[in-house]
Image (tube, rainbow, N blue to C red; front, side, top):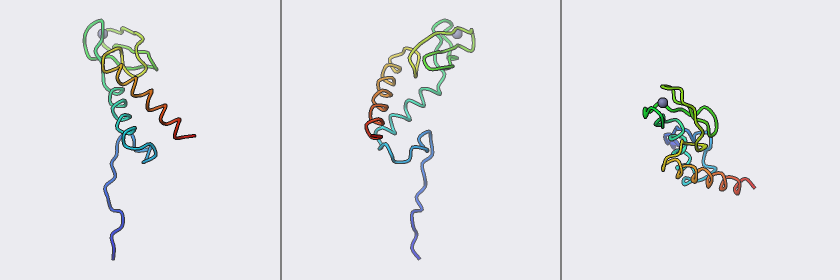
Amino acid sequence: MKQVGKRTKKVGPTRGLGSRYGTTVRKRYIKIVEVLKKLHECPQCGLQRVKRISVGLWKCRKCGFTFTGGAYTPTTKLGIVAKRAAKETLREEKKKNK
Ligand SMILES: [Zn+2]
């Protein structure tokens, strides 16, 4: 008897994507999701309590400070990179969907 396809499946945020978009895009997507889920530093009280409440809208759970920032991260260097990567990802997905 032959064993067929008993590889362990990687689970994570990209589970639903399958192999549709290729590894590069998937890796980038994981990075963005990780950044999204992380708590960010509040520009007012400096604590890492900032959560994204909507696209581009951030709120500090500690002091209640609400501010607008990037769609995926508040304005940090990492945020700029993630934003760019997200844009590229979207562009690539659009291309492949056509
Ligand atoms: Zn705060």
